[in-house]
Length: 324
Image 1 (cartoon, rainbow, N blue to C red):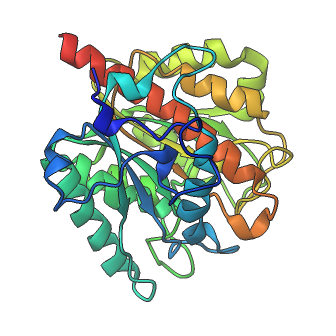
Image 2 (image 1 turned 180 degrees about the horizontal axis):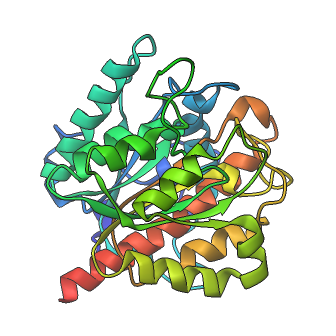
């Protein structure tokens, strides 16, 4: 059971509007801190949107997500999970990107997450745009390919943009498959929709065996049935979860760079994460929250609530491994 050193600050002890904001009011632990060897799940900010092709802004998300995460309490009101008792959690701070160089930023992200992996910590990340996931996977999957459950309105499987440029937030999972970081037959993409340039991404998915569940099928089948298939595809092997906030309909999450009409509501956005229970998850991220496009902060609040649901699933996974 988690010791008091890794419990979040209670709103009964310090008002939620007071103190320095860390993810979910957890302790801030750096790699130089002697407590790093005790951390089991690390919450990490990746304030970088160098892969954005249209509306920038996700570089500002980790700061806003930390602020709104002060509203998170210690127990899940639906599943009754107590993640801070199941695992020792800490805020590991932000990766320091290079805003002038895409490749250098990706190298920096991979180097940071390599330290996380070497320390035996499961990462829960807040982007940043979706290109952030590629360098994270380079660290987590350096020894073997992973499965992935991907919530998004876009596949992010395109080959390139703007005359052959291969590194944008529309290409990370094409690169991840090419680099052997993902086992495409253990990848499920849920919620895909919207107008298309072409179907190159879908053709690639079909060719390599990625299961794409478009939004029409999601709505017709419902959360429980779709998530049962996602769990079957991922199987018992190590699995990564990547959650783009634009999976959700922009009526509920307008603060994102590439919104698409017709998505799930905010309740379904939480339900799908609960449907991950039982998977062997070794890391997860929430990406594409863009504060400049939602001055109310509602998108960030929904985003960090999703992060809490992801944390509950990660902590339960960690606890199962301890019991085994």
